[in-house]
Image (cartoon, rainbow, N blue to C red; front, side, top):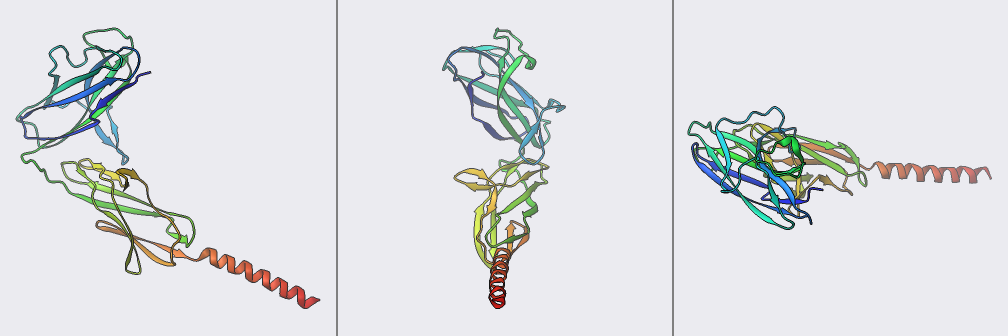
Length: 276
């Protein structure tokens, strides 16, 4: 079983066209046996709204060249990691001066060699497992490239609920129409009769350029579903996320049902006693 660690898990870089960069990675063999691995870089595009990525059919960018600064290693060349060994790999990133401004997305992979044999040009087809660190490169003429996010939609489920149950699920989409990725910011604000009931920070997921991302709420530095738990007061509630709002409605269904049940029971007792 492939048991290793690759850090950092993600790297975000901003560079001017034509600037060369380096990024250090640490790979650790956590197993009790030696493993044969190799390093590689693949481009990708965002897929869907859940943070998934797609490698298939994504062409290699002609504007970037990748290599290892380690004197004894090349990309796609196998090497051995002894048990508990920590090896630093330094990735060199070279861009040409004609690189268009905007985002480019890659993953730096550590691949386990299936054969367990050293070779000078390992291929991806031989890998039985791999670890990846996403590499987000923004090419820009400024250190703080502009990006614009907006809340594209809010979906509340259910729209009509009871004062005691069930919970209300808040789903939404954050849209990025700019050329650069940005982190989701803002709050999920719930109000009732003009008063704020609760506010929760959005988790700062990266919203990649010209793509959408499902929102999540922040709790203990972790992403969690945005959920409202009962009990609620009857009435109209408004959920606001940045520039968008949506309503859900609370009615005392359970009290009405309970009242009907109690009333029917009392009525049956009265009717029974009148007969006797």
